[in-house]
Length: 431
Image 1: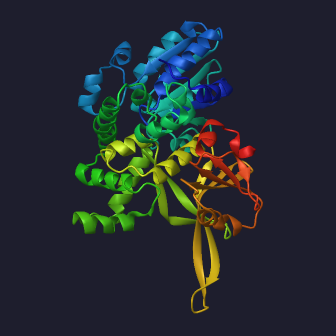
Image 2 (image 1 turned 90 degrees about the vertical axis):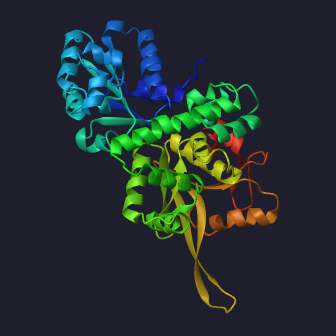
Image 3 (image 1 turned 90 degrees about the horizontal axis):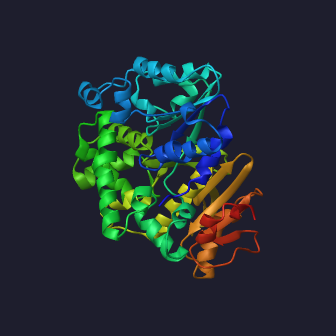
């Protein structure tokens, strides 16, 4: 069964022949290779591109490496990258002077000097380059510096809920429950049975993500790093920083880990696209607050597998799903802070910080969003809307709830929508 990824296919189509290096980034196993080498490849063929003008090469494939005289085993033993000279010689044997050639290169960061090689192809008018990679340190962060503004990133996430529902056989209500529990990694979604899904997620973590992070970053104390991952998994959507995490280690683990080491591990998790961080933003002061941050998992199934599916809080899981959906749609997402002054019991003025779950920006558009699992009564609704009513600008304010409600505006102009409509209708925020 094929899962359509039209959202990302359209991005690739729009960027075709734009003179830039198209870089598809994202967590491993989210579907980058399938998007490039199957979906986009098929599109090119259907568009009339001859198959001998489409060059597909995977740098983690033993068969492809054999074509250029490289050995995957020898590369592993020697702890080196793929020889760029051998690769370029192979490409020269394919590319003639006539017609446009498309290079679809998978896991390109495994080749030595890949930035220089790709920049070289930009000088050829008849070569259009598309690449994938799984590590921000080698790819997305280098797009600006190494490609001198000629890199064009398409960041890919695991399946959105809409993509998940395109192959799910039940209704959207049971679908969301399963999606929040087992996530959107395509390999997992296509498995039958909960035990099988859980086993695949556990295996992916131990055999792919942990091993990959440790290998790339030469992590020696793997147990310490995994402990940090467990702590983050148990506290998604909570404000934290390396210093607070260090104190947790000392209290719970009796560990002497430093905040510097914790920051290094956090950077490793973000570089592998396993987690993302959201900064706090002072809405009235119009300034960022560097610490503490909130951390969200790019896939909830991986997060739940990390803690053996023992801790499943719908409130935090729903918040994580909303965050991922907003990021997938292209929004920059911050945590909003509204500073107010109110009097205490002794009638003394006291500063207080109210929180807005998400401040979302895309171009000139901005939305303030609260994630509220349920709004059972007016007291709870007042609690959720209070920060909104302390903001004096005119940007749209929205509450997303799991309650089955039709979209409606209250007397303050605050829009309430249910999470199913939000996840399945990409235009819902504009209505």
